[in-house]
Length: 69
Image 1 (cartoon, rainbow, N blue to C red):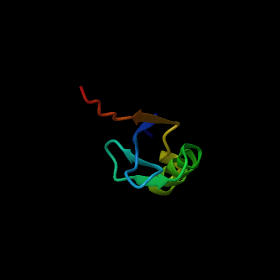
Image 2: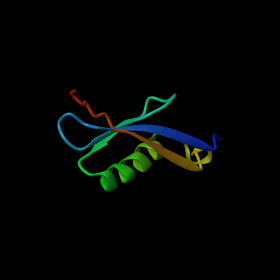
Image 3: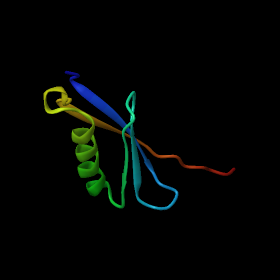
Image 4: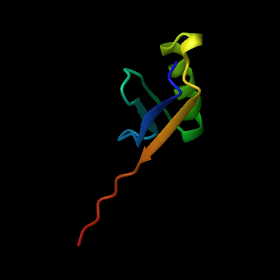
């Protein structure tokens, strides 16, 4: 059993949020950050069998801003 799994979270170009697990083929999206948290939990449960579920899910949120000078 792996203790934790990390998701990279970014704002979607179409609105809402997208999350991608690092090291696993798990992807999900949602309109709000609160909905994304539930979607990440559901996607993680679907990917792992019960006895291999990570104990902790970390969300690493990246926000990109472009500044002009």
